Amino acid sequence: MNYKLSNIASREKIRDFTKVDFVYPYLYKPKRKINGLKEQSICVITQENPNQIKQAIWGMLPNNYKGDWRKFQRVKFTLHVNKKEIKKNILYKEAFLQRRCLIIVTGFYVHKLIRGRLENYLVENKNLEPYYLAGIYNVTNDGFITCSVINTEAVEELNTINNLYEFMPLQIPKIFKNVWLDNHTTEQAIDSLINEPYYIKLKVQKIAS
Image 1: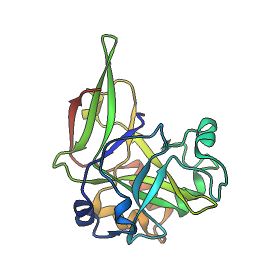
Image 2: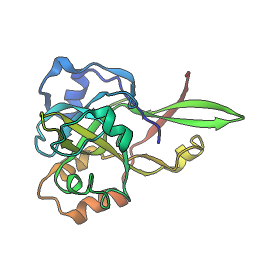
Image 3: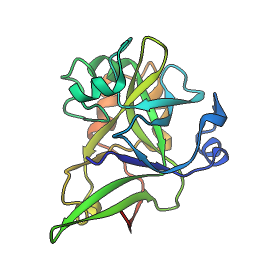
Image 4: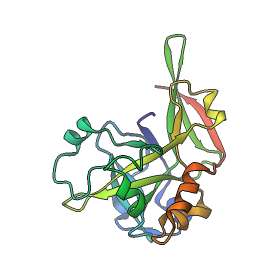
């Protein structure tokens, strides 16, 4: 899976989409390309605080971790987690049940290898509005939120372009926002959202490197 997201929405547009407010609004800056290979912050709504938008570090660390983000990423790369791994790995299984989050984006990137060259594509909502990706999170010993994007199988419309990955980020439609974040949602209901996902309409555009 590619390690770049996009969020070009204004604070006002994000507030209108989510119906909640930023805890620290001036920390948010729209970014066309969020490169996960560097330590980057992204907007999240957490299960613990579903009425707040917070900044989280993309790339999950163990809960109550005390060490350096970059050092841990060299041991275990956690920008994305495949839905099949989420219940098997010690880093993810507790977070899946207790610390789910929604990651707010306007797009993600994929690549296509053609005739020995890479082509780059940005996958956005057809109306260019923000949308939610499914995520899980932990909190470090000094209080920082760190999160991972949950991946699912790529939809057919992406497979015609994307020939390097079999997966894409899992989307959570607005109507299931509360289900995903509710502490009382059953594991069976969460499994259903992951295993039988609903997709928003996507717009794919070729972009320069």
